[in-house]
Amino acid sequence: MLTTSPITTMLPVVDLDRARHFYEDKLGLKPQGLRPDGKFVYGCGSGALIALFPKESGTKADHTALSFQVDNIESEIQELEQRGVVFEDYDFPELQTVNHVCVLSSEKAAWFKDTEGNFLCIHEDLN
Image (cartoon, rainbow, N blue to C red; front, side, top):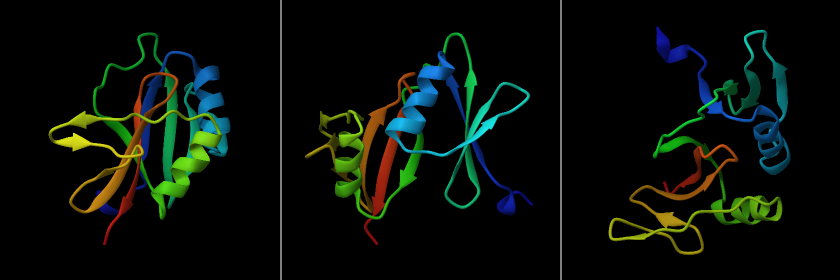
């Protein structure tokens, strides 16, 4: 039953205005608007939604909150950097980036944080 249900990714934010500026101006997402329950929603891909919701303490997650699949990760990085997005770089035995990109077994990935500390990712499938 859930296999055909649209998905909404819920992201807690401390400052909704600051977060909206990032998601709209830096990532280029088109707003769908403020919902009566206080969530601000963006549409992505095939019916997926991102909902920002105010939460005084924000988030403390140390994992990727969401990942955008892209066709060309290098060009997407370049475009996002031109908009002011700052990418994370890693040099761990199990995870290393070169020019912000980590090549994993079946994909390339690059991570950045939003203004609220949520870890976001762009990834390109290698197959």
